[in-house]
Image (cartoon, rainbow, N blue to C red; front, side):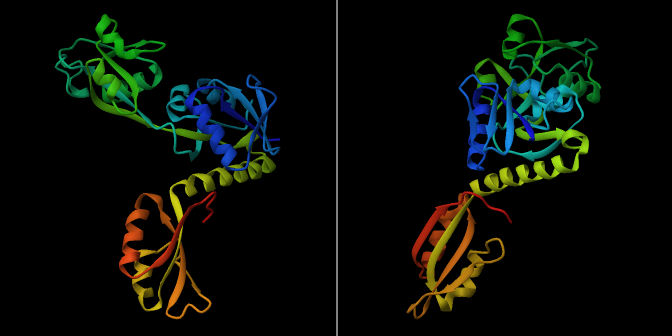
Length: 292
């Protein structure tokens, strides 16, 4: 049975469980503190710290895993990004005190002095500044990197942010983005269990199931009765995956039914455009899965 390493706690864990549940792979564990679980009777889950998942996957203890792309990069292990799961989005940024006079990475070390940089991601940080040719000393911290400049531990920080509000609250200004991260489905570069063909097939089935849910979340299924004479205009509004489905209505006369998949973010505008063409009886529903 394919073994998947999943985060054991936090928002990343909650979103991951919700995704697997929506994909029909319900997390069935013996209790809240159980370290293993069944995923819909199809796969086995093991629950570990998100930062340890790259190691478990790279060493073959798990065939695949779900964790943040920032943690994958920090691990330095040879892993493959198989699917962006669309949640846990954040950025790893360079930030300096508002009164530091540093406005860009190119300002760092211009006076010949080495600058101290505090970060929970020392490997990514060291690699980033080495590539930019900036003279820095990396100060590893276990958390709350934003306080380091105020305590004199470091001059600047490399820290995660979603909105930037925490950095601003602590008197820090973003200078540059080092990495954009989100939750990813990962495997070793040669696939599950060193390229085992059967495991590869099972993994592709898993990835397809998850991707179908992710794809569906941003789409809606729209049905409407529209004037037959307006079909050319309707097709411009409802391109769908391969164009709208057009169905004759029993005793519909001049009206026909159209069905289409439309982006959720613009469905309100689509409805308004259809109404302007004389559409009626419109219905919009969520989609559980979408496989193109």
